[in-house]
Structures are given as structure tokens and as C-alpha cells.
Image (cartoon, rainbow, N blue to C red; front, side, top):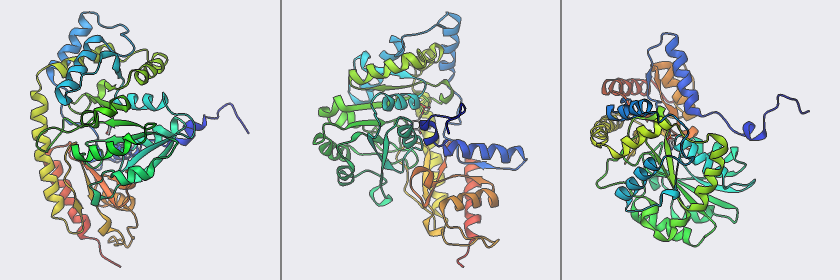
Length: 405
Ligand code: PMP
């Protein structure tokens, strides 16, 4: 029976983000006075740089406190165009760029602007938790393609080819990826592009929000840069949240074909009118100002990555492919499953394993199934060295206490 209180089916289809749920559980346990080491956080632990804050304060003082164009201020779009040119040698016209309340909103709008009921979106797993739910919220059908660790957690041309159907609207690539830190090389992107060139009805959304947090030689590569013949089918998204420690300012952006960007702007004009004028001034300062903050913090993340990988690597029956970018490690715990805890409970799944770490050692991580890849857990190393060291020691103690039945 229909009641006045019912929610739309699209809401009923969507599940709340597992990472938000994990963060909530950590808050509850901390409120009970428990000493939790939290490795679930998906944001930098650094403060936003001062010159960025100053730009926001100046914007307030000079009255830049009104609506802006729906797709963002001309200054910010010019800064984004320059950033893409500097990074990828690509010159997007400023009307091929749109700004929103975080990359999350831009990705959601891109799907909302293009999906009809039953349209398929290819999502390689492990995936960022939001992609499948965003597709479901927009009446689409997520087509999850498992990408094993033996393939570097990356989509291969063969797997892409077999996932594409006449209903495929999008393939989502996330490079460097959350939760694995895996990144596609130019050759791997070219091989995927060869498949895509044979399927002109398929667009690619490439989410590159972690591209500045990069540990390999050179720079992270983008599909948009390696295959010019796909330019009118690639939607490139990025933002200031991660590189500039600006998660709360809520500025993300996307660049791509004009008709897609126009459709996104049409929706945005009825959703938020525009992103915050003050945050846009701050984001402009972040992109055009001194990049020393990025260099300094990436050096810190790199040291934390090495520390975490080394400490976890010493624990028997855990293993981890080092991330190329981002601030997460995706740890293989499959060899721990089937073991028993000291209280006699069998750890059947990665979710059991994460719950055991939390209950027995007060270390919070997110289980791999949340990212579409059971048998793993994600740790964030966007936290202090002493927390990482202590957390890895506790994970080691938790593992050492397990035994086979
Ligand atoms: N993409 C990925 C892969 C992410 O991990 C995140 C943040 N967790 C986002 C997009 C969204 O970032 P924001 O909305 O803060 O720009």
C-alpha cells in the first residue's frame, strides 16, 4: 500500500556509504571512552594551507558572497583549464568545464544527466563505494567487473570487452584508485582505448581525484591525454579535496564534451544554482598559488606509505600491493579467513576480520567487500606515524592470536 511517508524507489535502492557507517561506529566507540586507532578516514589530516584560507577571507571581505555562474566563476574555470593543460597538455575550453560541490556531486550529476532506466555502467572492482549506489540512484544498472590483484586490481582490455553491451553508457575508471592506489600506465590506457574505439556508444568517466598524491616516477597519466580520438567521449573529474586538504570546502570539477557539460549545468541550475562563491575563491587560490603544500604533504604521505607497507608486510598471512597514489593500502587478508579467534569464533569473511580488529585491538579499518572485493581490508595512512605504527603492531597481535581450528 502506498503511504504518504514512502520514499522513492531510487532512495530505497541506495545504501548509505559503508565508510560513513564505519566512521560513525568509530565515533560511538570513542564516545564510550575506547581508545580507537582510526584507519578509516578518507581525508588528509593536514590543515588547508593558509594562502587558501586567506583567499576565502578576502573573498568574504570584498563581497564575493553572491551567486556565481552555475558552472563556476570564470577565474576558477580558467585555473582548472590551466591545471589540466599543465598536467596533461590538454586545453579544455572554459565552457567544457563545470564546477560543483565536490567531485562526488559532479560524478552524480554526470550520471543523472545521461542514464535512463536500465542503462549500464561498467565499474571495475575494487571500486570507490559510491559508484554503484550513484548509478542505482539514477536508475542505471551497475555492471561490476572483478579485477583481481594478479592484474594489479586493474581492468584489462579483455574484461572490458566482455562487460560492454548495447546498453552500456559509461565505463568508470578511477586512477589512482580508492581503495587500492592502483594506477593505469599510458600503455594500459591505450589498450583500453583500443577496445573503446570499437564501441562508440560508450563514454568513460575518469575520476582522478588522487592524481597529485603520486609515488611513481613522472606524473599520473589520464586516458583523456593518451588517446585524443576519445576526447569527445571522456569526462575527466578531479577536485581540490585531497591534494589541498580541502574536503570541507566542497569544490570538485569535471571537463568533457560540451553537450554533456551543458546537460550537467542544466541539472545543477535546478539543484544548487552554483557552488559556494567563497569556496570557489579558495579553490582558485589553491590551483593558481604556490604548490609547495602539495610537494610537502606528498613527501609525508610517501613516508607513511612506506612505513605502513613495511610494517604490514612483516605480519604473516597478510600482504599488500604497494599503492602508486592516494593514501590507502588495500591489504589481502584472505589467508587469515577460516582461522579462529581466542574466544573461539571463526573469521569467515573480511567483515568478520575487520570487526575482530575493532573489538579485540580497537583498530578501525574498512572491509574489502564494501569495495566489491572480499578478502581484503582498506587502511588509510592519512594519519600520524605513531598511530600507524601502533595500529600495525596491534593488527600483528590480533593476527598472532588467531589459530586454525
Ligand atoms: N572519488 C573518489 C575515488 C574519492 O575517494 C572521493 C572522496 N572520498 C571522491 C571522488 C569525492 O571527493 P570530493 O567530493 O570531496 O571532491
